Length: 71
Image (cartoon, rainbow, N blue to C red; front, side, top):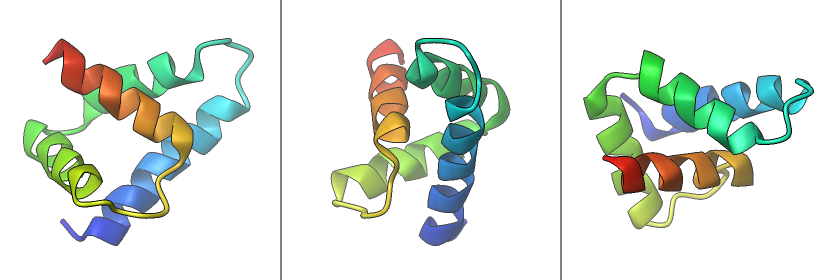
């Protein structure tokens, strides 16, 4: 999948959860990505982050860090 598409999708998830009342938005984003993204999509996103991909919402970066630690 194209990097721009993955970043767009992840940022859209973060945008949705920003509007929700829950305090821990990153945890909600992480749960969503864990439940609905294929492992290869997550792996590609980790690689993009490692390579310095720009435009990633800070909530997404936090969420992906949490997912990576739990893997």
